[in-house]
Length: 200
Image (cartoon, rainbow, N blue to C red; front, side, top):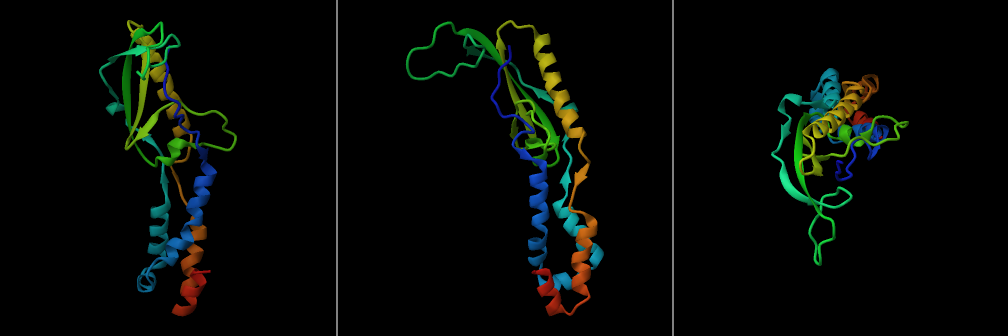
C-alpha cells in the first residue's frame, strides 16, 4: 500500500482563470511603458514583446533526469501511513517501512501543473509536491515490499501527468489580433491622445 501527502496536481483552479488574469494584465503592462520608449518601439516589436512576456509555456518533463533517492527506513501505522513521532506514547501496531523520494525535473510554467486542464475536469492529478524546477513525491510502503509494486505505481503516476500535460497546447498567450489593435490605434493619434487612449 502506498500513501502520500495530498498535494494533487491539476487541481487548484481552472486554467481559464489563469488565462483571464493574464489577459487582464496586458493593458496595465502597456500603461507602464515609458512614453518615450513606447513611441520609439515599432508596432511589431511592441506586440512581440507583449506576447513573449505573457506566453505560458507548456510543461516538459525531463524523464532522462528523474532521480530516485535511496530508500530510508521509517515507521508506518497499521493503515500504511508514515508515522511522525509526537509527544506521548507511540500508537500500537507500528510496522517497519521504507520511504522513497522521487524527483521529476521539469521546465515550463508551474501554473499549468496546479490548474485544471478544463472546466469539465473533476479529478485531481497524482499527489506530488512542486519545489523549484522539480516535482517531488514520497512513496511510503512496508519493509520488504515488492519493488515492482513501487515501480508500477510511479510509472502510472508519471503517465497520468504526461497525458494531462501533453494534451494541452504548446503555449498560451493573449490573442495576437487583440494585441495588435492597441499600439496601432495609439500610433494613429498624437502622443498625448495616444497616451490617453492606451490608459482607458
